[in-house]
Length: 101
Image (cartoon, rainbow, N blue to C red; front, side, top):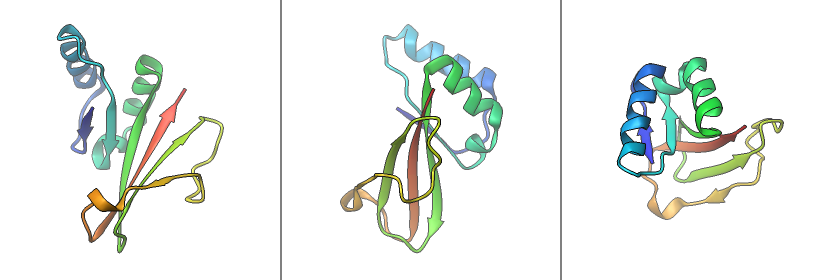
């Protein structure tokens, strides 16, 4: 699983994914901040890998919500989630949402 927050191109995603696969490593992308801002990155992950996780940082929360959604389901904060507060840093809130095709 690679967490990518900085800007990245789909060509770089493809090259990194190939490198992982060449080493027999399963690839799961977690996109956030600049990496998630690109619809090309999200579409590439959906088309190539069947989905991705997205992490969104917000203020004033102390837990990590991880939600797995079908593509048709809207992400509305009330979706079923698992609270993983024990391992999360305090201060910022990180919501990670899996997007599947």
